[in-house]
Length: 568
Image 1 (tube, rainbow, N blue to C red):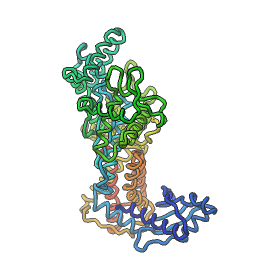
Image 2: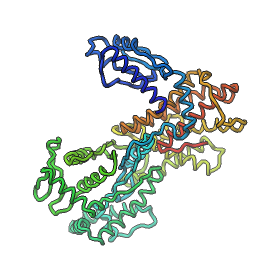
Image 3: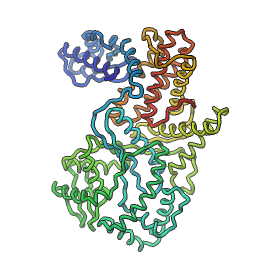
Image 4: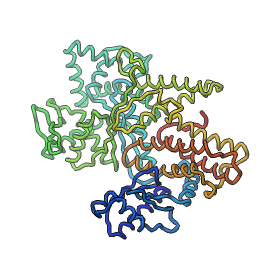
């Protein structure tokens, strides 16, 4: 257990003992972050109705009953009004630096917490990813990285819709229109998909051809299945390339058609019928979920006998439920209803339900980019624009460097800016991505955090050039007495707890906030506290602190999917 979690555990034990000493019982100790303490508790508020005393008096009573453990990590407890404020001692600070240096890139990482299957992105393969998709991809990928650090075995999956009507139209279009091989494959797929929809709109009699394809794929026609797969493969080739640019990776790709071919869909329908909830209306099979609060029935089979996306999704989730301890879906706000219905059906079947991360959509400022004749803005277009603007920013700041250096920095700064600005906002809040704000080196965004890491790396490199062996450095906690030093160590200690919180609450923006605060804390230290110019014993302790900051900043950036540069 890391220092901060040990400290929190000791605070919890001390407060619980004080409650028992006063014959009080409460399960929630109401710990919270505070700028006035290392850990604060507002438990006195919860006890006020029970004790019929003011929260302030209760806090003082409890503080008087707290016994600090010998050789522990708690320095003192103070009351401020109704709050109990706990402070860590020098042993906590000392061991934090020792742990970071000993564990290096594994600092704060836990193991053995079970298997997670996390599904994200899963965009329809009928064209390129657009700006609306990037929040799904970045939230999902960042959550996967957080969960791995928190001790879970994580498998990220992309659920490929290869049986829907849109794919039938793409498959049909490939047989009727020329495919532009000079274009990125997903963009070329979008072009013929748009053309096909125009034709189907102008010539309604051709819709029957699409319906026939849908029937044939449902019944396992191998020729149609191969045509659909060919269409999907072309789109996915381009989508995967875009995800790679965003530093987003999937461990596996689950194909929707698999669950029809292996009879999981028909088994799922039979299981739903066995619940007694299935009703037939105008030939269609539906599920009654009124007792779960859904007035509208969920259709799981059309009157012509074909299954729906929802039916196949249920079969997919039943498979996932048997292969992991936690399943997590990252879905847009437009999926709130259907995801609720899906969870209700799984509950009715007695199966585990997925944890759903619903995100509101990301948009761009009006007029920030051309939409090319009113079409959607693809993620590729946005990334190209970001890359161009990032290069302008780098050229302003490093005009003396060669072109390869500038392009490399522009690339990792641009991708970092996109990822950070998208994930820094709580998923349930809508957000506007403004590349001007994201690339502003003066603001506390990704470039600011990356530059903090580069600065820490540079200090250690300069120390090594002057003959100091970083690996042999030792620290004396008693000489690190400046406010900026103590604040930085305490921020470094918080990292494992932030990971734990982000993983349990599925809130990746907690880590983004922490990254900004840590970088700010390091820069305050660097601004006011000399390192290399300090006298030898103090210099060595400060170098240990700089190296510890470098290690944790690198871990944090990696967990956010952002490159940690040595120079920029």
